Image (cartoon, rainbow, N blue to C red; front, top):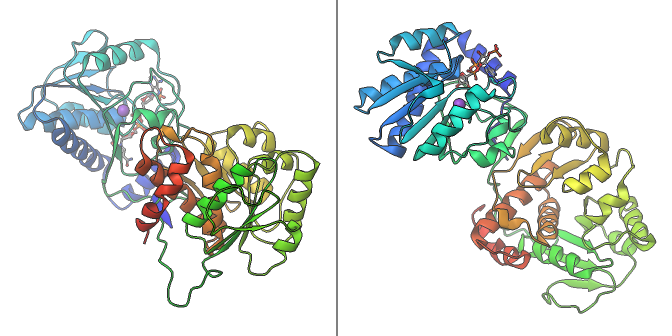
Length: 457
Ligand SMILES: NC(=O)C1=CN([C@@H]2O[C@H](COP(=O)(O)OP(=O)(O)OC[C@H]3O[C@@H](n4cnc5c(N)ncnc54)[C@H](OP(=O)(O)O)[C@@H]3O)[C@@H](O)[C@H]2O)[C@@H](O)CC1
Ligand SMILES: [K+]
């Protein structure tokens, strides 16, 4: 269920080095990089007067190639640079550019701005002598295209190290990097195009891809499709949302365990007011989901303890995560679905990017951790990690987390391993949100799940 690999700056350099060791030269790779960006710019913007900004490294080298190739297509192209090129390949490309190179500080803007100032080599915040003209030129342009990355973002953590300009298009070179998917950088990319330049990369970090979820076969019945038990607590509405999401997300049998019998929702949900331990003793239970609307009192703690002792696959969300704070490794590799606040309560302040933090938490808890947010990260204790493609901001509304937990539970119950189940749930959730559109509420997500599932057949 792996999607496109995502490589850090160092991993990207290692992937390049492996290709260079086969006899490909840096200049050849740079020509290829410049070629894919020039082609993308041409297709996106057409015959528009263009200003290419070149930095001192190989990102700048790409810029000189792009300028030459666009000029050869008949475009009016100007180049401005922050200084002289510092790498051999960039110097070679500078020499092949037959026009003038203007100083960045006072260059006049153009309708199309191509930013080749810094890519994966950006090592510190942009200094104002570069950030100010970049911002001025970007504001004055009609279209902005970033080469590999917007200049001024941290490749590995997506942090802002510059003015935070929004681009219409970013052409990622060779492979995706974390900043293409991590916020706040990811929000600046515009249309993200991956430019293939024959530098393959492999990584334990991937983009979450559309899962393949085959339709039930002739041998399937309601239990093989997955039996999800959702524990009700103080706020039964949240558990009901999870149960409905599990049901529409493909589970064959969904039980709501608790006292709020008959409080709305489909008749197809089985409601049982029996002790949770008794319900979970049934071998046919595929997953227990505990947390949505659970509450944090002694009764809630008792339910969580019963679930932890039951030996069934677990999805723990919301209040269950807060109750777990301070516990160490968990058994049976449960799936934990914290948002930032719950994550901090559970694991404290961890250093590094969202990927680093999710991985550290997964390793420590021996659980699959779904760190939810505008850039949801899934991490497993074995180091596998995945980042979701950006989902609509409309998901920031009450109840959508309950829906996600139910979806993950359904996928776990159908037999996916915890990491794949979490990724599948996150993908379905994001896709349903796109289908539901502006102004969505959690219930709308559930209504759109059948179409999201259809997309995965
Ligand atoms: N992936 C691939 O296979 C291929 C990748 N290619 C391209 O190479 C790009 C990576 O190139 P790169 O390593 O030369 O780094 P790049 O981003 O140009 O910057 C480094 C320069 O900037 C400087 N510098 C850093 N921070 C700074 C600051 N705040 N303010 C001022 N200066 C600063 C730094 O100086 P230093 O830190 O040494 O002082 C150094 O001189 C990559 O993104 C892609 O576009 C293709 O050409 C070929 C195939
Ligand atoms: K750039």
